[in-house]
Length: 635
Ligand code: WT7
Image (cartoon, rainbow, N blue to C red; front, side):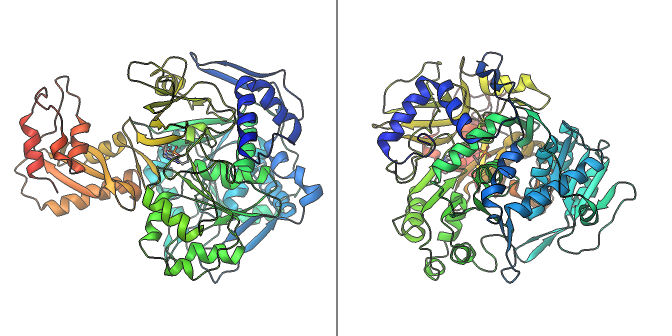
């Protein structure tokens, strides 16, 4: 077990060096020691970033759910696997043991089979944060169906786009969901989406809020009666190491969201190994990640990583503000949470409400605090460290992406000395580098550039569903033979990394990755709009918020601008989801453009951020005069 659980800094460097010098031996040892295989591999790694093609554990056979569930039954049958904390604090929490999880996943898998789902089929999961979400994910994996979870806060249009892109044959959903004091009509959203999705044959509906919904004959079925009839035994389907496990969509800087494809064995090994080390998880710890399973954080660190380690993982249905801003801390006290993993945006929102609601609860069970999704600013870092961790629980600022499958740069708690706003050191096996704009690697310390990864790691996404060319162009074309992350970063004098933010047209709002292009498309569909450009600007809670510059077709448009603003945000909500709404909308007569017609977002960003005296040379623009007019009308 020596390399599975790192305990001090010297050991980190030692294991890291080995993982970089002999990556194949290193990952083979991890794979040999800790997992159930039906057949071992013929080769640990084959790769070629120019194609790009990456194969880990070639020809190995396994099923990830045997590793998440069956493997633990001998020793952990009665241990809680999933601890469900409902939206309403008065509703009782549910402790789902490994044995119960096994039975429920098998029943669900049998239902999927009965409904005609086969290995390789795509199943869309649009379910709120209730146990059925995790169980349906695992049920798909049990029979080799490829799950495509769509965050249950997305709109019907966003849902339909994702269903059609992956050509899903089934949707799993719920009648509705609870979100704080509100309920959401999920089934209604699904019905609307399915008007545009001819590929869907079956809809399975979990009952959560007991609302009246439409059930379409021949298509829609209540889940529970089917489960009740199903056997609790279901053999796991044998999967190849490189068979797709799931598709998960992430925004791109242009057009369609990208369906990132993750495969089975490499993803399993890396999420298990990172979970164990980055959280220093010990048997009987209670671990809580506040993300939604609809994002990669939830896939890797609510479902797969924790269950692969036989851990107890909390699944929280609600929001941090309900019934009040003390809810997170109330849950920490109630369930004696040991590892707590959340996003900077949540920390900032809670910090705004002072320390009274934190001090009210006993947080002494906490041992490790995690942060993910965006750079954590110094103020939020200290608030988290002082008030939640009481300066005794290390903060792990974990940098990674949907595409990377698992954490890439992170401190190991109690091992790596932390430094506010720094994700610190590469995780074991990860070889980051910084590149300058001419494609040269920046060697040594105290440099800043574009963050790339030089060598494959087991949980990297293998392709974009249905569009390998786009995968190659997006990630492997900017720098030869390297994976380009889209982020900028600096390396300090001791080799610690600090992520400085996106260098492309992706904006991170409250930890959600939003591409500017789909939002601009949604705005441009409004009949009064000619053109638009979106940029991010600093926001004290969301990290970044969206600022839209909109050009109307009729500049003399006499309509009430506030109504127009509402309509634009309404259109964005419908096309993408409320998370993509603009904080500010400025109507303008033009946009600064280069001579080749490209919008100069850099200038728009500076204006939105009130950095007007620092615009640089604008004289080479096609229309330099527009800049002053935009400044004069700034909101
Ligand atoms: C982008 C990926 C990884 C799960 C959640 C987001 C930003 C993520 C950090 C961090 C600075 C971070 C990056 C990255 N990001 N974590 N600790 N420090 N930036 O996944 O939606 O795929 O977004 O989030 O810009 O590229 P995602």
